[in-house]
Image (cartoon, rainbow, N blue to C red; front, side, top):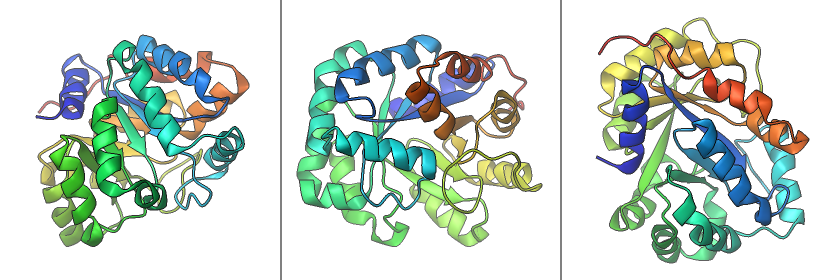
Amino acid sequence: MSEITKAILKARESGGCAFVPYIMAGDGGLGRLKEDLLFLQEAGATAVELGIPFSDPAADGPVIQEAGLRALAAGTTLKAVIEEVKAIREDVHIPIIFMTYLNPVLSYGMAGFANDCQEAGIAGVIVPDVPFEESGPLEDCLRMNGIDLIRLIPLSAPEDRIRKIAEAAEGFIYAVTVDGITGVRDSFGGTTDGRLEQLKEIADIPVLAGFGISTPDHVRDFGRAADGVIVGSAIVDALHRGDKEPIKELISSAKNIAVPAE
């Protein structure tokens, strides 16, 4: 069982759900990364999804796009992020998951990227612009280094495709709750809970819901239907404004919720 899976199951066993915040590496400068990670760890995050800034982030909404542009303007590179994580990893005990696009990985070199991620203690990698059918080479490189390739599955996908991707998934399944890009939303489709339950029946690893989740009520609602949640834009915005209280409230909302009996 992978480090990520263990952390998620531990959160579930404690009576709540897993909470994975997304932050943009280099937003505010890489020198702030350790402070942000330690804050999230202390606040009770299960793991952290660490975004790598990219000039064409197709899956990201405006808040995360702007954070990426700020990070790029500060000179943040994939290599620099890996080196910074390596330097601070001894103090960060929760799993770190990279969220990057394929071009930076190819520019870095797929094998070298996987090896350096392993040396930095990266537990998982998400690459949203790699189609499932073309993910084999990256998956092989990561697996050789003990790193999970996290799969995204849109809840609107046909059942046969959901089953195919779920069978290959590692760490957890990233259930995409809406069609489109990331970002704060007020409402979700009325069939979301049923689709999450269907996905959980198919999968043999935890299922986390993400995209659009931004309020404590969202966290509690999705946390009851899934094994955990991923929150991005609301976290990125709060850190940019220097207001950590909403983040503490979001993480706290994942604790002690009524989750379905297994």
